[in-house]
View 1 (tube, rainbow, N blue to C red):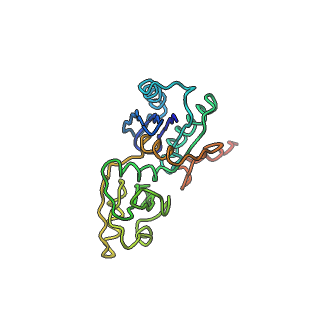
View 2 (tube, rainbow, N blue to C red):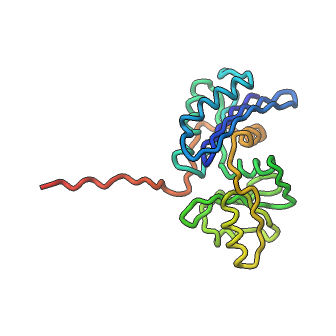
View 3 (cartoon, one colour):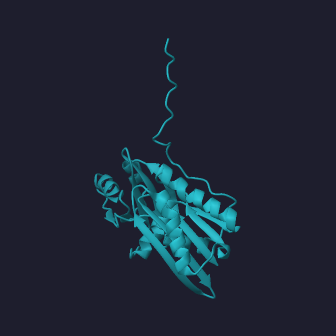
Length: 229
């Protein structure tokens, strides 16, 4: 199976090709941290990883994208690209949330969890994008848009680790209740490499991909101008 994975949901832009055949896997991936410019960066990354992997558009079996939560515009970029490529190539579509991808990436980056751990991303305005995962990065709860104090109430008693840039916020809220949570991998971002691995194991396809927005967009339509008399 040949999988193309795309992520533009948060503070990085990434593309990956995972080739799996006869029990072997080969991964080619690119990831660049950026706060904006994902739309311009994504397709050149796709071209590069496909060229490195020796995979043509017609060879793709599955195209995966993160569906959110994250940047309102960023989430839409990867989804639109995946939809367009699937239409051209007739490949299947796969999507999952960005926090689940971060949980898998945390294990890849060396997190050793002997029990559940949390993923927390600073969603601003005093809120977190939040999820709870078991030691194998399988989702137990979330993704949620939630205040740190409320997130603490959801933590399993045995949970002691949180990853993501919202980790310090969750740890501070937990300490107020005499609960110790250690923030790790605070620069962690969702990435296409981890997404490709999830897609390979998940194997579920969908007819289309839809953004997962946990809050309304910041931009609002302008009020209609008052007619001058």
